[in-house]
Image 1: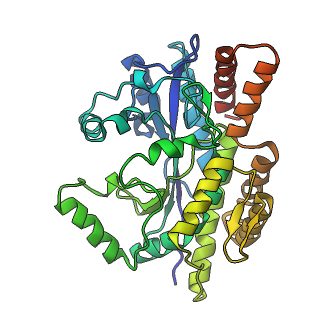
Image 2: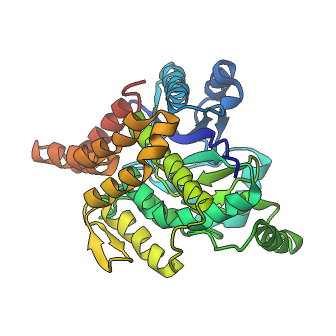
Length: 376
């Protein structure tokens, strides 16, 4: 059984914020994107909102190369944006902006999308990250998608960066997911028996005119419609670059671990989507704090234990890829918390220091500006 390439590609979305007001830049000057394009070519592109920008690494074989690529992308966008009085922030929601002020990018596909989604689209002021792992065999891609869905809540919990919405603490670690859930064709992917079944279901939607193609499937995990990859989409954008790399490493290693099981005629147990959805909610609500359900044991397990189990499961695969250090760095996320945890800490510290609420929220934005370029 030949081994897939397991190549890696990472896409990230950032908000562009005004350094003076700290609010989103509703309509950044077109020269900003032109300068980014001149420096980064097709590795940078507009996003649904004018206040967003998307970057993507090249196809990489090693985590070290992916990290260097992403560091350059973050650094370049920050340098260009700075010349216009703006800055990128890697956060899945902006701490206080009013989504009613946002404007979608003037492009046909985004105009059609805005027309289709209406109010649901107008409040789509969120950013995420997507991790592509190369799996050339289509049947294998579907089989691994069915199995790794179990781990999606675990990956979400490590990535959370959206505790605030329109100036309020939502009480959730990933409010982005609540916003995104308003779109059609979102959530956990279906279970498919084969690539052929998946293609038939997609064709059914296309033939009725519901969607143009499979790029309009916005599941937490999907076979990419553009590349021979399995695309992770559930995660918030990580504010720290090192957190992005740790999660990408874990996702890649989990896929290879599941491939090894298949090679040995074994497989991960498939649980009902209603059970996995419960863990999805727990990760969205509590992040790393309250643990997830282990359905085999029938109990809630602390996330620290779950992380150690995943590290043990993937140790052989991390050694194979030469990324053991990157895998173990997931422990650092657990130790210092996710971006959502740190944003809340900054906010509460500012309030305790006598700042008004609006100033405390601006302090959170300043924190995000600094952390977005940390280590790049």
